[in-house]
Image 1: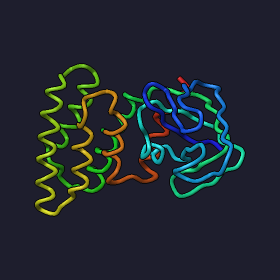
Image 2: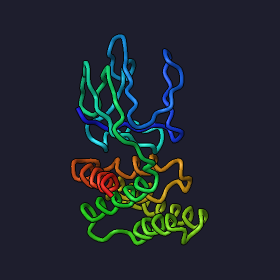
Image 3: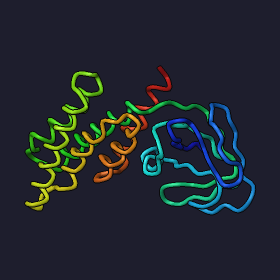
Image 4: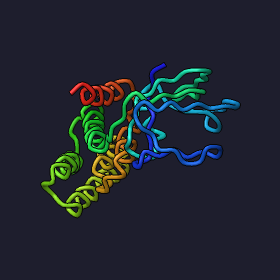
Length: 205
């Protein structure tokens, strides 16, 4: 079964039995013992957007899961997991945060607050090195105000939060957090398709 799995940015895994391991393409991990979701075994998610929920960092692995497999709605646990390829998804997750926010605003808001739109553009400008961390933080603060205004008027507060989180976190190591929070309000199959297409395009370049 093909699935997705995120690692810490140093590509490390840590468990109680084997200690710390460093993952690389082609590595096959095996688990001996009971399979218990969230507790014991090798975990992954069939949908990339579900794997993002559990991401401890931005290093993304495409994996083949085998042996015994147990599944639930958004994740699985297995006895065998082999890394097919891996990549640093930092910039792609930041861009996905922007796309998620735009998707939500376009779908649910007739006239989006300009501060939210400006925050999304600010994140893209920051990725290209056009603005500083401080300027991005200012855009985040403005988007934060837009989100609170929407909450006050009981209109699309969660959607505005997506735009707020798109501009959140200039720190590159926290890309997974920005993407996760931006997608949270409207996470569905459309956004999963957007994210998986982004990553698959990188794989075949």
